[in-house]
Image (cartoon, rainbow, N blue to C red; front, side, top):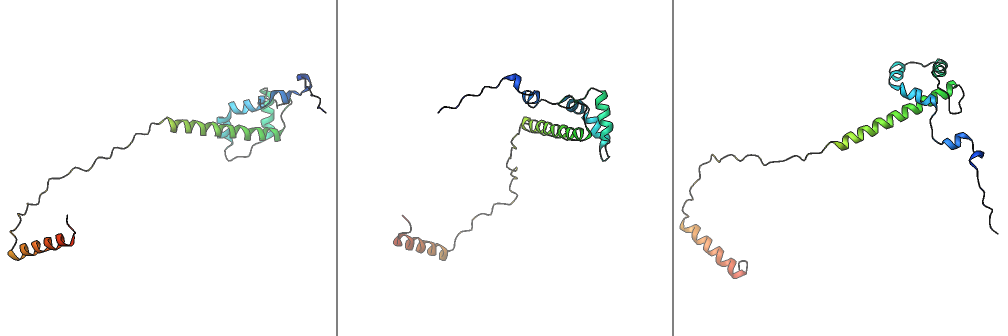
Length: 146
């Protein structure tokens, strides 16, 4: 038996589903003022009720179009901070990748002229010459030399 195909109409879906990941006006208000708010709020307690009152006066509503609650404002601020951190990391990664890595050229150190005087070879004594000839003959006979 075949299942009946369910058709969903656009009108049946709530706005939050249709809008998907769209951000609220509160989010964008906090996003636009992120640098100032972060500098002011660093290591201080934030009065989220005052933030909500300010946001409401500026037209910042939550995703449902209602006045923001303190907990919602706090969560929204965290999301704004996360987005800014991601954007900063992306900018830094792009900056790092745009730098052209120039290979280091490793040149050999300059060779100084030898200051040692060349020592002329001393003539070998008769005993050394005989020893060298004998060693060469042994090597030949044993097959060490071709």
